[in-house]
Image (cartoon, rainbow, N blue to C red):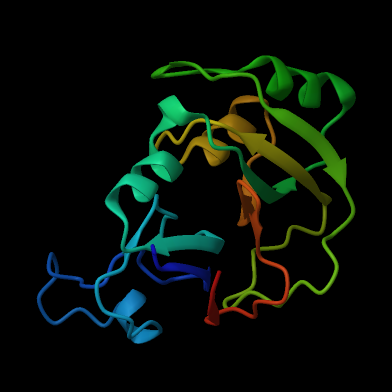
Length: 182
């Protein structure tokens, strides 16, 4: 039976168990939170993104979760600078042209700030003259920093990014830095 762990990755944590690339680095890694041997992240979240990270000890399951050819849906909550109009959300839904090509269509909608949202440490930068808002974006690809690049391409840079769901697995009930077996 495959072991499956759901982890709420805090801001500033690397999606790997070691930081071998930087001698003497003080950056936090998964090993600061998870002591279960033999599990590996199925996909990644960059250091400045938060939220659901799925870990498993089953290589085939890891591949089905992370390989774009399996089109595993991943839902993100993005706090963006400005308030996207319907045309901007429709552009995300149809696919956005990035430097590495057109993205697959996404499900995009404006949402209220998610309930039970924890404060980010450090907080996002706030500009008094520019409002911010939240969108939910569900994608089936996994390009490097894709959601951030998509929101920037439509003119609404991402200030905070939280992965809320991978397939049927969600963040529900997981505080930042906490994990549970699924």
